[in-house]
Length: 400
Image: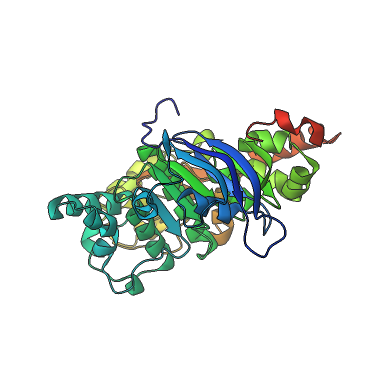
């Protein structure tokens, strides 16, 4: 992240314990954890491991029984909890929007509480809606009920970022949407993070999502015990305990595909055309490039359709048609995402866009399959002996 602007701040949990009255065992026994500024850290583990409890203790929706929580140099354990939450972004499943407020009013909720001027709130709202991929002119005045689940979740992210907080907490943020929308929301989050450099803590039950999004992954077992806290590649290559090896389990091979991004492999250039262009001239450009298809883009360079030359030859001009099943992934998508998109659309490839949805190229299935074969061969060659270390050596693991 050397070339990334970081606006987030570090988080430290120092001996944090949570006990609930009437329960014999603590929900979180004793947690010591350091999260670096600008990192995305994904909390993952089985039900009852304390991941959501730990997340909510950071903004004190749940009060810790013991220990200290530091955000940057501030010990926030005894701060006014309402003021603390106003300085931390928080995203829950389904967005958690106020149903009778417009999108713009939802996004501006915290800035209004903080006393921002109307002009500043309007400017910030427009910027954030653009950032999460929603046209302000189209969506600012809509009510949540008039939007899809994925669009509502994007508004939830925009609202959480409205007051420019250094820390963003996300509790199963993409769990209530369909798989395709989930992938697009994940990609959107990675794009936003590349631009803003916040410190993001995310709870998920999906290990593949954790390895895709997390700069580091925290694997917890019952009682909030740290089993491993490391980068996704370190966890997959060297699970620290038998618990981690079993938890990762048979998903390790697929998870390896989440370590390779679309931007890391070769994808081909495409010939684009705008609505209204002369079809014969566009076809000539495509043939000169050796293609029998083109990509129709809108005024911002975002893909709308992927017709063949035979299809565009039926009309003198490129027509305005939106293909709702267009297979599109971003450069930050994983190869696993790309393969899923191809299979869902019954296509032999996908279109590749940048973080703002602008066309960058096309990725073919044979490229993805070549990487899968290479990963499979590597896993087979390394699959000779257990790679976990003993519990006695746990104290050498980072963060434990």
